Length: 185
Image (cartoon, rainbow, N blue to C red; front, side, top):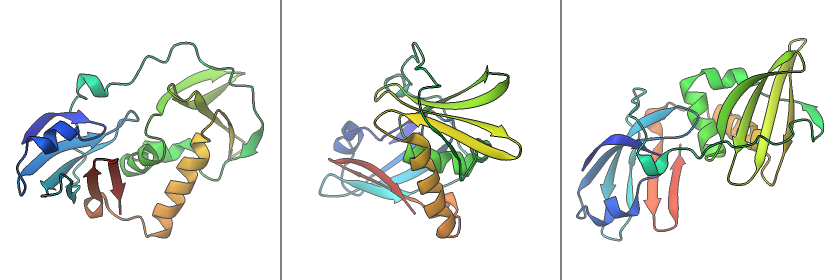
């Protein structure tokens, strides 16, 4: 099966409709705008696994995989500040952005002018979580709130990836089971 649209997660129906040993070729990505082509082999047990093929391949997301409307933004001043370990400049890199999508799969990104500075905001509409970062005197400051600390998750995932030697995307593996999808390196 060859999909000519992107998905956030590989639909279970695609695996069900592909015989064991068959291949699914699809672009897997997220709402932060980084995606990669995955080549998945379907197995007898109803799962599928395979590598990312790299190359910064991008297709328009399938309608069911589009992000929800942001709606009314939360009060971005409602939390404590801390110095960020990693700044949002990491999101300028395709691979780093892909890694952050693994950590915060429901996050959307926007940039806004607030209090005389540029703030970079990640918002997870579903959970109500958010993180806002800005640069001040050469260091990044983060505020976040909600049930999921989005930037903590991003920093932790990026830290693990750096500790592993910044593995190239073509060394990542996508696994799809009835419990969901995981992407590992």
